[in-house]
Structures are given as structure tokens and as C-alpha cells.
Length: 187
Ligand code: SF4
Image (cartoon, rainbow, N blue to C red; front, side, top):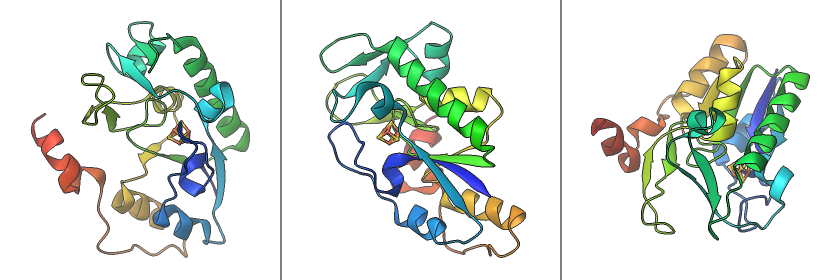
């Protein structure tokens, strides 16, 4: 079974600052013989690495696709068109590979599926609810997208489609994590 993943999660150093965002959970998934991870970084594909930090302003990834919001880099440059190009390349690869689902790094203006970095107070931290451009495009094209932090949901989904993949107890989803719980309780 093929699963699309954000490249940074498997250790590719494609984050904006040249780091990776290696996930122990994804590493374990990688060791499952029936699973093949198809990785891609939509931002590296169009901007290279390292690159300026990006934020969505005026909405979320769906709004960007609809021309109602923009992607701006830390220098104030509008990079919306290129961000969408990267998302289209990601979609095309995953369609070609006939993946079952995608697991994307949450919080990113490309790969975020539940949360985005706040545009206010940039470059300071802080999250808001929202979906990034690639995650929105994949979802619009019928691809099931999981947040990389939705480990309980991913585990349960895989156990339903892979005989040898047993449900792991004690895993959490993003909305159960103290860091994000309040954000979703606030609505
Ligand atoms: S764009 Fe996606 S794959 Fe690339 S570094 Fe950001 S979260 Fe990872």
C-alpha cells in the first residue's frame, strides 16, 4: 500500500531552514513491509531549500486556491502562484502513484491539515485552525489527508485496511494534544 508523506517527516532536510522534521511515528510506519511511503516537498520543488519562511494571509489554503488569499514570504513577496505550482506537482505525483492516503506535516502553509501558523505577530509563533495549500488541493481531489499528529486516527485507519497492522493503544490525535486542544475548544 502506498502512502504519500511530507518529505521532511522521513528525514529529508527540506524545511525552510534546511532542517528535517523527522517523525518517530513515520519511521515506524516505514518499517511496515506492506507500506511504501511516497515522499515529496511541495515547497522545495518550487523554491528550493533553504528558502524564506512563508505564511498564508487572508484565509487558508482553500482560499488561496480560490484566489481569495495569498501566500507571502518573510520578505513580503507574494509567492502564491509558485505555492500552488508546488501543490499541483504533489497532487500529480500522488495520483500517478495511486496512493491510499497522505500523511502531511501539520502547521505548514503547504502541508498543514488542521493548523496553520498565525499570520499575526510574524515571525513569532502561534497557531490557528486551518489547512495549507497542498493539503487543500489533495483533499479537493479526493485524497484522504491525515495530519502527521493524528497518530491514533492513522493507526486505526491502517489497521482497517492492512491485515498485519494492529491498532496501537495510547496514541493521540492532534486535537488531544495539550498544545492544540485549547485552540479547538475555543472554536
Ligand atoms: S512544505 Fe511540507 S514537506 Fe516541505 S518542509 Fe514544509 S511541511 Fe515538510
